[in-house]
Image: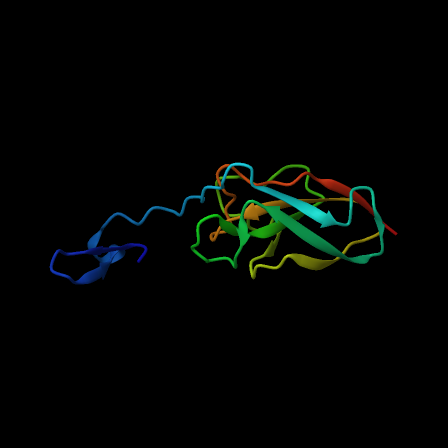
Length: 143
């Protein structure tokens, strides 16, 4: 239990009542060597309608819903039109689209114009793995 400590007699008290040190923040999970994430479709340079399906690919790891504590698993996060990656040592929050139910594809709606899409794989806490599993960005044009 986070933020809890025991008195030595089997009784559990919350840390704010005893002044115990809080539990450490979750750290990222490790990823196996060679793990990769990528966008299956659309392909780089594709011209798509304003509503289209993005299919996520993964090699060397498994997909599991957020909160699932199984080694070498995680879930997809999609970056749309991001010039920089989110911090790689903390949970990815508002900077990305989360697919925490373990989805391997999503219907996306974008305004007409050129857009970039990039996948980053997150662990049970939405934090990138160590080393991070980040796909190459693709560029698409929405008509």
